[in-house]
Length: 126
Image 1 (cartoon, rainbow, N blue to C red):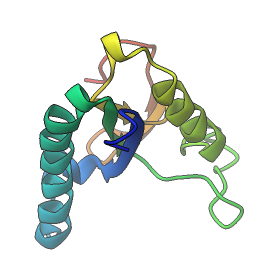
Image 2 (cartoon, rainbow, N blue to C red):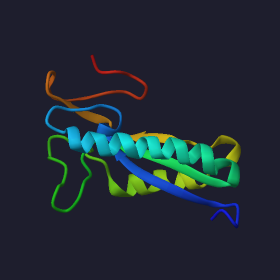
Image 3 (cartoon, rainbow, N blue to C red):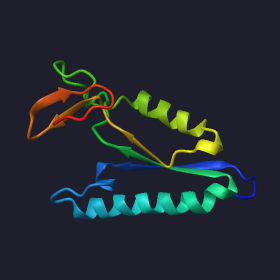
Image 4 (tube, rainbow, N blue to C red):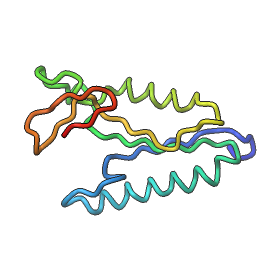
């Protein structure tokens, strides 16, 4: 990539990249380290034409074995939606490259709030 002054490195993280959880220290260490690698690599390789981006996948990913519950549609991340976001980042002009993108379903479960609640874009659940 460096000889051609172009390319992309996409790194996949999780919510543990930015927040540690009980009983998950080993997982959190790896994900924090991956995020740090993305930040360092972006600053080193960006000027050489290589886009480095870190994606925080903050939620379950839908699959045939893990469909959305009937009473909570879109409560997991759609793999096609994730892929579309990757493509969108790859198509960014280099004058406005993203370093980190956080992906989460619009319906978010909360242990302290009971069943999943919906949120409008830009709002916070309290």
